[in-house]
Length: 237
Image (cartoon, rainbow, N blue to C red):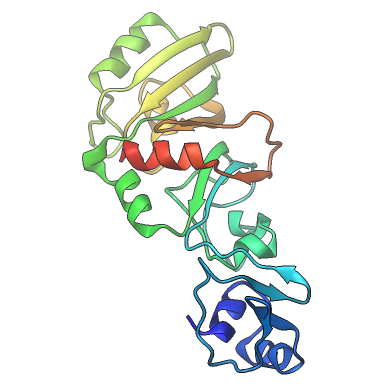
């Protein structure tokens, strides 16, 4: 890879700006100053230092975010703040995108990556990747509801969902539940409960596939997946 392209991809400026940094003698490769923008480097093996800081290149980035209410699951939007807007520049330069989506008013686990192949695998209907949600419902949730979810729910457009695993955590005037589904239809969790005459008043995704939301993450915070988590995710697909 050309040194100017590498540095530009890592957010050190435009190609033009990077060429100026190179001409100033601020970049070394394996201890030798490099001023020629056309020089090719191996980012995985060469030691590249810019302005005294050694850079660490990676092809893919994997981020776990605790998505807050009011932020949309998109890479850009003309009106609303997006999950990508929450990223620091050094992560945003890898152009990660959300794997699947969470509604604007839904919180919780969101995976962002630039690994298109992995994203495709996780979103493929054939993979039946489970997603678990915590929700607060506006009324009593019963064992009859649990049985209905086990059979699948017919939505307002006539679509009959795959079976869902509904667990009642607390039942009352407001009920706390956990629901695991393997699909991602538009507003699916809300519409499944609406089909039973109930309303979701709070929704949070707590897991996707083998990964569980890191509860140490405050709303709007994120972290890179550990290598172990990445390996588990890739094995899972």
